[in-house]
Amino acid sequence: MSYRDEIRRGIARREFSVQYQPIYDIQAGRCGGVEALLRWQRADGRWERPDVFIAAAEAEHMIIPLTRHLFELVAADMAQWQAPRGFHVAVNVAAEHLQGPTFVADVRRLAAQIATQGPRITLELTERSLISDRKEVVRALQTLRAEGVDIALDDFGTGHCAMSYLQAFPLDFLKIDRGFVNAIESLDGDAPVLDAIIALSKRLALRTVAEGVETAIQFAYLKRQGVLHVQGYLYARPMSSDALARWLPTRG
Ligand code: G
Ligand code: G
Ligand code: G
Ligand code: MN
Ligand code: NA
Image (cartoon, rainbow, N blue to C red; front, side, top):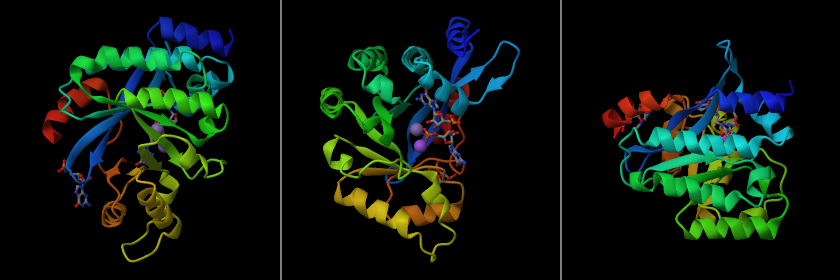
């Protein structure tokens, strides 16, 4: 059976689930949202690595049906939690989906399904997905943004794009890749590339999310530099929808 068929069968057998990683809003002093991360547990109990099956789904043109399935899982999960007002739910979007003809309709369907819960959708895009089809992609993003969807650039600093896309695309958040956060070793040490990324975000009026924050020193450094949101094992690990439903009321 091809990997493509295995993914299709996995969707039909409901082997996919979603883990949610809380994102801390430093200014508000509370959880500001979550990132949805897809997981795949095979019938024999084995967990497929997400980086592996996501890459395979992209390579075999299964990422659009898989992401639509993710949207359905997220909508069903969200009915179980009490998300505070202004809460963000971030979903990762692949280049093929973003550039395809069904993208706006697919996101609108998710938005309609979760409308009663009132959270905002954040689309996490990678630099790679912004390379081609500029006009079409800009138009799709502008349309969704006008309807209240936020756009985040994920894994910032790890791609191979010219930085001109930062001005060409409508963006709200810049997610600083964990590699730059890792460079923070002490409060008085320096992390020049990280500092430059934060300064650039400010100049472009983009809100920053630091990823992979694992230590209190990293947290304090980022807070001092004016980063607005942090995500990482220090604050919370990715967790099931049930665990999130229990966790949220304790962390508001
Ligand atoms: O926890 P983590 O191992 O989930 O994620 C591994 C990689 O897979 C990350 O780069 C993450 O962005 C990506 N990923 C996780 N879930 C999804 C998803 O639903 N869609 C896409 N396109 N990527 C995802
Ligand atoms: O590429 P993207 O940023 O969408 O993927 C998020 C990935 O980062 C997931 O695989 C998630 O499990 C992982 N992650 C989240 N917090 C941390 C952290 O503090 N340290 C590390 N090493 N990985 C993290
Ligand atoms: O707001 P709440 O108490 O839920 O958040 C506490 C969590 O947020 C801590 O576990 C830590 O991850 C992070 N955090 C919040 N404020 C600070 C701070 O001033 N210093 C450090 N080191 N972590 C903080
Ligand atoms: Mn992401
Ligand atoms: Na990332």
